[in-house]
Structures are given as C-alpha cells and as structure tokens.
Length: 134
Image 1 (cartoon, rainbow, N blue to C red):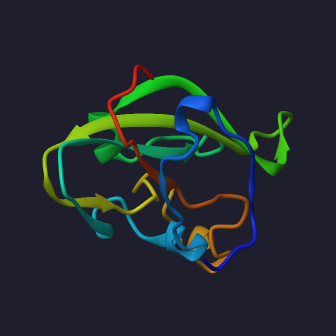
Image 2: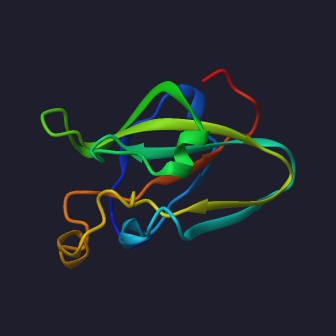
C-alpha cells in the first residue's frame, strides 16, 4: 500500500490465496494495540508473514503455529535476514479477526520511533482458501 515491495518466492501451497497487503509504516504500532481487522465468512486458517529480522516476536504471535515455510521479497538478503519472512498460522472461526501491531514492546524505544523503524518491516497476512498442511 505504501511500499512497492514484491515477493519473489511464495510456496505453492500459498499461491492463489487471499493476500492482505499492509502499510509498511504500521510497523511502528505496538504489539499491544490493534492494527489489522477483517472479517471472514467461514472458518479459515490465517497466516502472518513475519520478518525474520525482528529480534523478538510480538506476544500475540506466539499463539500461532510456525510453519515450515519461508517467503522472500525481491530485495532479500540472507546475510542480514532482510526481506525473509517466516509463516505463522492460526485457525479462526467465522467472524471478525483482529491482529495487533507488529512491534514488540521489547524493541520499542525513542530511537526506533524516530528512525521510523528503519531496517524492519510490517507483516503481511494470507487467508487460506482451504485448510492446508503447512
């Protein structure tokens, strides 16, 4: 939405799923505050693509199962984990799904905010059309 990044590797099981592209600047929202909200019309697995570069996970993401998949962006670099995302999955019942902010309280600081969260990125969301063994 506010960035031009594109993924260059997406596992086959995640292709043709619903992808919610989030705003990059939303990475500054604390893990304690609501950030993304959407409604699903039936029970579905929701995947969060979370950047490996973050030194800690937000507390709410610990309720998700980590999968065996990785997704990379066009600008990914193995040497510093830039543009490399782990895929976390959780099943939700029909209704409203609310996800909190990207930034763990442990890394929020005045410098992090002043820098605009430099070198970190916001998560993305995938909604699976059908249950998959990720």
